[in-house]
Image (cartoon, rainbow, N blue to C red):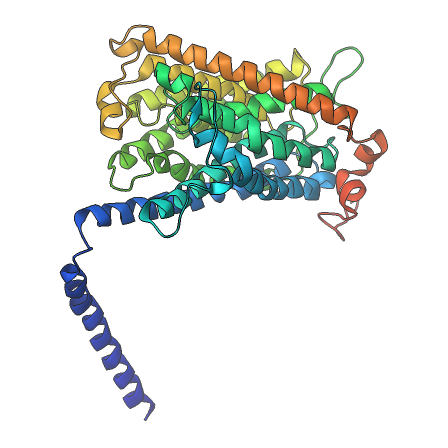
Length: 458
């Protein structure tokens, strides 16, 4: 009896599948609305949404990296900061950030309309596209915000971080986005930053630098004689998981920036993105091996991120070989930068965020002026740009330099002012007692690993 019922269910399923597979396409084909143009819009919209979801998945990637590179007593605090900067950032970006970034330009410096996502109207096709584009852009804003968390980890008051999250997503990041992506003055000059080495990553890196300078180092990080003490992260496997999540999400970050699934350059962009990350991880490993005597795992992990950050600006404008070169240089640069900031400048950056995102973001943006090839830019819709090494002279390079310096001045200056105001009002730095106890207990009244104990075997 059971076998007969199973056969009947199987037969009905097959018949239904044939109906859906053969009859419904004929109905759709007969629909006048189903044109090549509407199909292209549908494909582009779905691709943009899928890419946005991939970029959103980078948020837990950042959380895992930062948690792994810091101490166990601050793990819950790191997770809360990553959660809240996305939640608060989403509302701030909906409220004013998106309008400042993509609204009608006021002298090329900031947008003046589109606040509250007022340009979106679900009753029209264009309105629906505005919603898809907004969700793709808000996850970028959240990425810029969360980068700072790693640079100011383990000694920042939680309320202070919440205030910061509002302003970076509402003003600081959107202004830069308008300059380069929203039809602003750097865009009119011809600056190329396809997916945001500067717009997203350097913004986060330079804001992190401002925060780290005003906060000062963690307790015990530096000695009176100027020596630097290593403060190891508590969970390298967790950090490694975060890096792989970020690498995965980066395919949406870079290739998704076409906002067009019908643009076949998404394949080239995925290739350049991957090759740069792979090359950077290798060169970072060998550079650390040479300088410290061991192939440091954390440096190799940050090397992969450095390559991803560096290729983000030019991923649609460079060849696979050029991507490998850019990534390889970024892998070396990130190790040297981390060492320089720590041992020479005494800037305490627990996750290496300033070096990975600020320094390598700036380098990747400048690299466009050296390695860009018109054939790649044309296929991706980024124009006929040739860098110095491909017959374009120094013109594009100087444009990139202007963009990098302008963004640094704006972001570092405004973030320094913001953190200073927070310091004088809400308070910026946790007390020594709170730092020693751990921010999980002092800020959130809980432990990330409650019940775990370490026993001596001696």
